[in-house]
Length: 159
Image 1 (cartoon, rainbow, N blue to C red):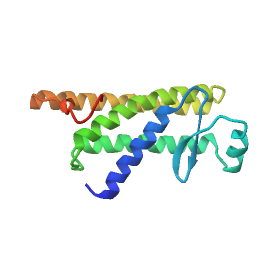
Image 2: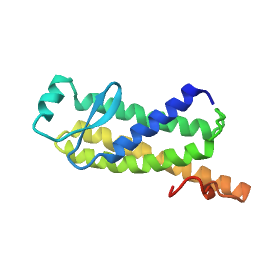
Image 3: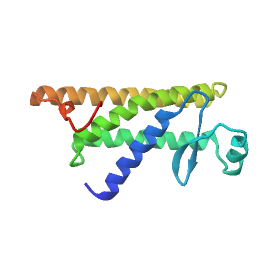
């Protein structure tokens, strides 16, 4: 696997982790092209205005992150790409997609009065859940066919 693809996977996992950390009524922002959790303080409104942060921009970044994660997992499962740590990557992205759903649910609380954002988030959650099911099915079939478990790797704690 090339370093640029490694970096793409790492950045995807990092963004999923950040989305998953989002608490109820929390807000995301984009700094230097990376998702961040916006501190909730008296300057939040000014910072968001000054940096031209909008919920629409954040939703585009979130959507791109999720679609990238789905693309990576589908390419691994369909063997369109061969990577050294395929099993680890699938497990890690599955874990982060699951956690990411919680962050998206919390984001729905933040924008509870914006029906467009709520519909967008619901659609993303549906995509996440469908992809997580595909990954689970793939892993289950892999285990049945190989009579092994990719989850038995002791180097990857609590996944």
